[in-house]
Image (cartoon, rainbow, N blue to C red; front, side, top):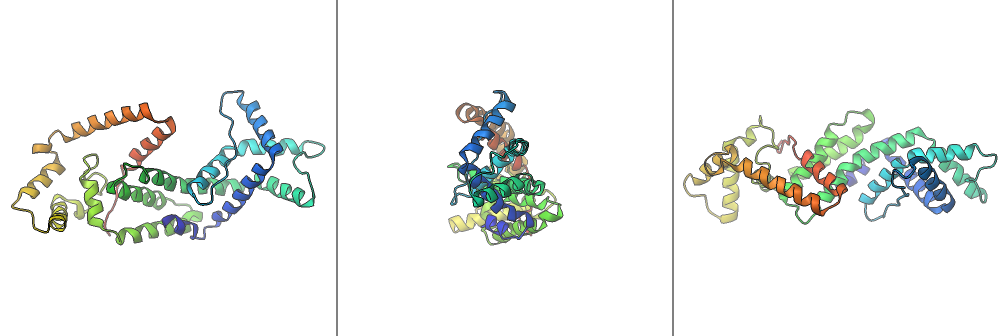
Length: 297
């Protein structure tokens, strides 16, 4: 839904998505051009890097559009070399076929030479990347309520920090969309899920906000306790536990040590069982979640 609002924002650079899809479709339909592109990569890499292919997005999986655009950007240098080499030939080996095919080839070559197209595609890739990362995280079997709220924070803060004039329509659309959905959510449950995760506790929230001092967090836990158990917490035990947990005292004195140990063990297990690319995604997730989230207006 947030992504849908992004594409409806009317930002000028979004019109290049259609042109990017056309270029991808055209390239994949030209076996000869793909062969030339492969030869250029082989010649320049001299066996030191993987040969990249053109990726076509799956219509029903928007994340594949991000991957397709990212790959197109990775191929930009080779595509420009390809059309430059072809332009130096007495007769073009790319502009062939009937009149319609030749006109299409000319328009695709002009698009490859269009700096504004690549600039817009780079901006689009930068915008879609946090969405792709968040989908990867939230679709995992280990995703929890705290994961959901923190991924919303990733998207909000990423767009909120955009300052270019051409990005403002997208920025405003995404931030408004996230804000609206957050205001309509069960905020108490989501906030408590983050606080009760020992990896975070109160760290993702703004320390200067009165909403997240010990007293208000205790009131939050009392509200949820009454909702779940249909009675008020007995005595002052919940207050004592909340205070000790947040300040790492009494029963929670060594909580930070235990959290670090468990995190180190998890990193070691991850590095042994999954690929390097996914490890990078996990590292990016952990980096992104150290954010200052204002959870209430």
